[in-house]
Image 1 (cartoon, one colour):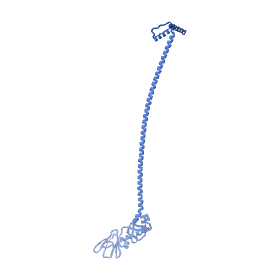
Image 2 (cartoon, helix red, strand yellow):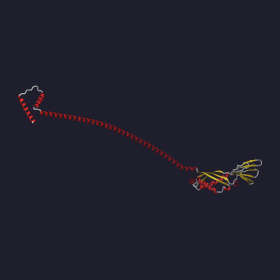
Image 3 (cartoon, one colour):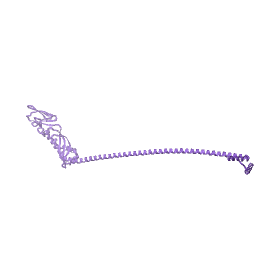
Image 4 (cartoon, helix red, strand yellow):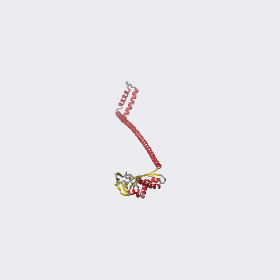
Length: 351
């Protein structure tokens, strides 16, 4: 807004460098430029116009309907500037009050309404040829490209000295009821996916619990197998110890039996040797007796016959323990017969 300072006969007007100031005297442009400062007479035929020369941003909010009669709202931001401020001041009233410096009308609203109308026309043209599904599928990017193409093709803004520096559409929203209807399948899919994830998590948990239980069972089985093998080893060790003890006892018994057998054999051998020695001694004694008898027999054979007879009688009488012997005639006769026979036998042997 222009700054106006009033003095007794003249007034002074000044605008910032971002604004265009035009001074009209008697309906003709006498002076213009950005950041101007001028003196003027408030009582004369002078009029001032101030046109913003910087870029302006205007929020765009448009509602339209698609080909299937679904309401859609579009929001965005349109940037514009006065490319020809003097031309724009001629087409739209940008005059200011000479006392306050404020606009007499609302020129900025007029410019923004014009931009809104052009953008709305482009948006409605885009929506009218598409269903709600196609609009949502194509998205705001396709809509922005169509709007920019339509605005570039029109000369409504350039004809009044306005240049559209950029337009940005950030939101393409259906009606709330349609949004809820469109969100329902997605919400159902998301809920289904969440349920499936929950079921999968529970199934995984069950599988893990089953795996843990199986591992515990396998561990118990392995433990029992180890215990069984340990018991089997202990039993084998006990059997081995028993067998060793039996073997030791058998060896001891066999040793004892062997010792006894050896002792018996030794004793038998000893007895046999003793028996043989005794038999040999008896045999030798018998042989010696036999030799003595033979010698005595040979000696007896060499002695006269009366000597053996006398010896025999002597031994007989000694053995019979006869104290007194009475010989009768009969006995003497028999004795003589015997002696005669003996003498005859001795002579035969001597011959």
